[in-house]
Length: 109
Image (spheres, one colour):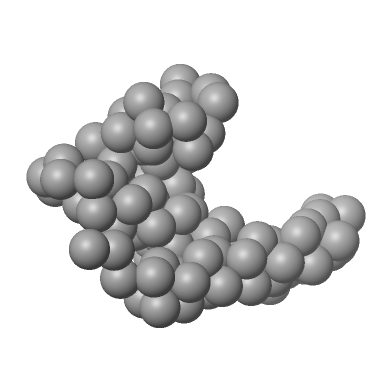
């Protein structure tokens, strides 16, 4: 049996995260003048991606598929028809990881 209340809550969180990312991207030009805006955009991106793969994981689990990582969740989401371009989503996971590294280096230096 599907837990639709939890699924709906996860979908709502994802929608709000997408809205926050869209809003933060309106400040993209300001990044060139002030790195402060980069931190907001990158955090919005990270949160959005986190909610997305967790939503995909939940949907896959409901279908009886065991999922242990974001990459697996994205592959399953593609098979389930939740997303169209699995390769693009895989690249977003890699980019998010790279952004974390860049951010850590930025803080160090």
